[in-house]
Amino acid sequence: MKSHLDCIPCFIRHALQAARFVSDDVAIHEQVVREVLRVVAAMDLGNPPPQMGQYIQRTIRRLTGSEDPYRSVKQQFNQYLLDRLDEFREQVRRSDDPLDTAVRLAIAGNVIDFGPYNNVDESLVDNAILKAFSTQLPTSAIQELREAAQQAGDILFLADNAGEIVFDRLLIEQLPKEKITVAVKGGPALNDVLMEDAEMVGLCELVAVIDNGTDAPGTVLELCSDEFRKRFQAADMIISKGQANYETLSDEPADIFFLLMAKCDVVARDIGCKTGDYIVCRSRNKEAKAA
Image (cartoon, rainbow, N blue to C red; front, side):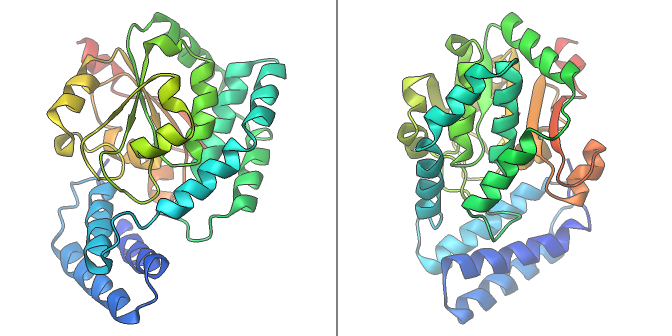
């Protein structure tokens, strides 16, 4: 998915919001915004929005000297949902369709995103969970996901945010987990999952976990390691969590199931939904890989 003119104000808002999250120094806030304005003015709109997100986050880390500015909030939300894991696991177990319930929870967890939001707290997460059980999801897409997972020999699961990954664990438990490899980020990218987060929530004990070799939000394949790209190409099926992964992979010729909350108008228009909708959709380009 390409960047749009409508993305530009969002880049600037995100730069200022993120700078204020990391530092109280107004001079650093100004420097971050000025540097981002300069780069945005010359950016290639053919690139997906998360590439600018990578530049913004690298700029903030460089100017503040903070190696992983979101580490504490990642741990906070990992622990918050870990403390409730048994409660949610029982909810999945007792439901009429455990896979459907696990998918709903996994999408609800996608609200834990410090990119579009600056006010993520436990009440926001709780409200997203409630919404998950009152929203309509396409039953045909859930069934497609179920059947594709059974037929696939090799499934690559692209994780997104910390905290959210606790619900991803519940989803993976409803799938043939012996076929699944989970991919996390290779370096700090907002509050995206790193290997230490996967270890914290016990995911490494459940399935194989690898990193993608880059600190870019989403999955910008040309920035990922050779090893990860080979792993991506070898997968029969890819489960992609979150908006940034949709933005970077929606045009890839692979069989991808996107699970996300649409958090901005640009992405919602591209998908054909409303901002705030919970989405389960299969890649429009799945036929290309077979061809």
